[in-house]
Image: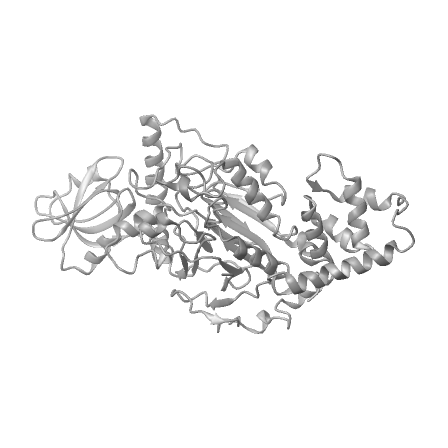
Length: 555
């Protein structure tokens, strides 16, 4: 199928090392001869230009054309060359139709089953969600005729909250740790105090035995007694108080979900001597069961990916090209956003023996290679990126966004860079983007088989339950002390997007969409040694108007 004019323009510009503003692409695509227009604009571009502006295009197109040295047949030659290019692209480029695609209702929590080449809509879709025959909505098709995704630029919106970039004040002193934990307690305890008749630990000490009691505290310790019961120590700003969870109570199973340093509430009865609470109930900050997520006002989609790992010998380059080619097809015309949840590159010195598995050994050259692959993505898409633990930012979370030098390397698409984690609101849909290193901690600590690397969305559920993306301090995940806790989930997101574990996971928790997006790196020797079998070249496509997910596979 011939590519649309705007797509041909974007590809021609990127092949010459240029990006362009969306309106600039629209102007070039609407020219009488887009190929000649691109030639004129590139020839007239400033020497240091990376992104061609609308003004650059207008100036070049309004100028008197220079004599064409090719002679009188130049136009015919250009037309035939353009046709040949389109034919060659259609015949030779391994464009993926998505391979195996998967759709899942926003109300289901199981990992979707795969179907062969058929996009299955959820049973909740109504007439307002019907697609045009080409795979897009009627409005999306009309927009494409008017200049592709660029025609919808005025309808787009991206807002970012919770970004630590430029706000970091922690120096590693004791007072910084006190500050971040006090802030965590204050913010999460507010979400719990409305559910229980909270008393500070100092007040519990003075209450008579047998009294009803409730305490909101940070989990200071969890240990089993000689009789098999559970003793949970809770700490607030006044002190520490123990709660005993009897092994024969229904709530005993909730102890498996606990992590140190998370904030919970316990209700129960004081012992006769008043020195302990016999727990009757455990409350987590949680997401309300009745949570009603927001959706976009039009049919528009976002591709959620992570863990590209350019620079690794196992980078799935062919699959990436298939993904990028698919983004240029009419089937993907509604995919206007690309959200990347960390690990753009493989990095250097991240794990033992990594240097033997690198294809590119210099970290800056890795980002330059990533930038070249990013150019394969249509230039009229909005891109948002957060860093991960393989990226060249500080390892401790919250991680600031990429520095100016790395941003300049990855500047071709004018992407938005933000810290890890951040809440990115796309056309009214709030998406909590977190790379996901703490998932290792949750999976390792939880005794249940259902919380595993094969089901990363189950670990994500627990983080939402705790309303904190990395509660445990001093474990596998490095945490930086700040004046406030940037890892607390204050507002319930509509979508929770993570990566890191290289496994696909799609589900829902109290109507919040959960997506762990897999990776673009085949199994390394290190991953094999720790029994990680990655889900490679998966691209979950989120319908922002319904929150349905279609998983596209390109390998």
